[in-house]
Length: 394
Image (cartoon, rainbow, N blue to C red; front, side):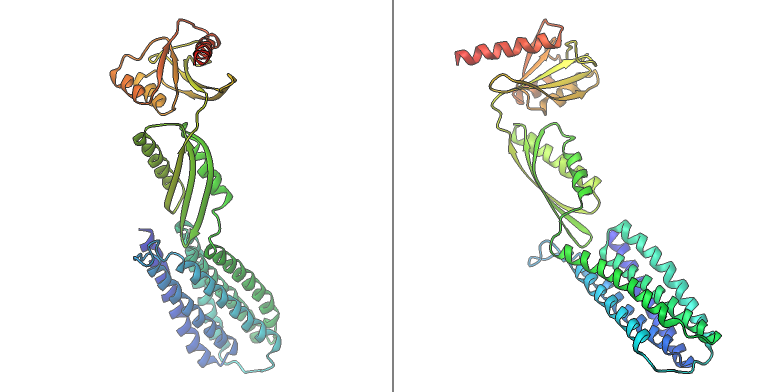
């Protein structure tokens, strides 16, 4: 759907520039206005650019054996070419404003002014609408084309000021031309730099990287993000992740990785590909999950717990509270969460009653430690003391 929308906007730009080019050429011949003729030539360059934009959007989605990742970067190449047209346009305006000494008589100035007013209305409205569409569709080509049409609006403003000056007997268009040409150069430079960055595989923005990190760390199974590498190609983004996960079975690990990939694609616009490499955590200590009430002080069971507190115990028996997860008083939900946390011991008042929950915890390699202690600290101390004794025997 997005591809169809981009093609429609690119085609609309092509049709608009065809119309404006013909309109300006006809009235440039009728009025003898050099400024209008220059503007017609400018519009013709816009027409060429629109053709490039339309073709690049059309072929950027094509994939083949020779180009398995698609031709998305054609959009960035087109954006760079458009920026060069902007530089050329600015050069022509500067040359005309600063070095031209030719004086021509303009006939029917009011016709020329009317044509330029029509041009300004069309270019202003279309460039603003296309820019919004480019932002929504994340298309560098449409954005570059919208900026170029906006430059056409500014150059039309120059021409109309000059024509009004001619009508009133003054010649002030060349001063305005110098100012606007600098704006065009600035726009062209931004488009050029952004296009080159994408061609050289610039990273995703800091905001996008931070958002991706936030999504990943929503999964308690992720211990560490070793690396995030991303790049842009045309409208699309490609992402490579290297994660450290708690020790799981192969099926469960694949399920978690698939969930992370799906959520990233859902929340980050235009992610084309997410490649996740994962490694199991090297667990030398003991990981304990404690079922407690809301304030974390009193031990509860699978039906009454309001919070899961995760305690990591190092091999030298140092305790660190690594996570606190609020839960509903629901045995299956608590069992599902615990089965994904790669815990060794679950401290609870009782074993779960539901067979499915017991089975999942068994597959995850988790042992339920029933305790008679009510106090959180004492219950944890009970387990750690037992583990110390086990290590001494070993």
